[in-house]
Image (cartoon, rainbow, N blue to C red):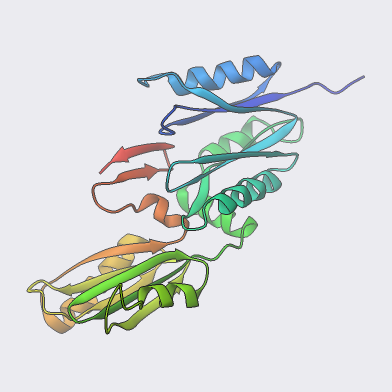
Length: 254
């Protein structure tokens, strides 16, 4: 007796602002329709299928430009690895992360597996992505002559430091810190004296708070910010830019 076929699908709106999925449907059309209807509910525009799959898992990777990359495989780890690899190849200067943990439609993975995947936190998604994809995202911060410059998401320490220290970018600057797959908090005195304190932490809020404390202990009242080089940048766009809330699979305005 042949094994039953299970179908699944992902769907997103045209702006890639919302993502939904459906799994374990009897036909390809039914899976696509369910994903599209779930995604379109409450949206201004109708969503479209990103691809249907049968007796497989699917993973969706996304970069900072909101471009998505969908790949399929029999095992969820392989699907994630393929999606991130495709995203990396198309995004040499941008971070790539999983929009959602892989969703599967097969006899191997059940509804409970998909429910756990759907509820994964950003930290869990990033940790999983780090396991299946070893891409390094290097960043560097330099300072001098009243200037502070940074370069993020570079392929190596040497490239990040060289680009940040380029004379046309920051003349007579010196390196403050370089790091990979993490965030850096940057803080300076509120009266604009050019003293700079940096703290590296994977959590951008913790990085900024640490830099502010370090700066305030030396110079009094300080202000600061955080920059990230790695997947966490998907949740840390500059002020005023859309913020990708992967916990709810939507983009929001800060």
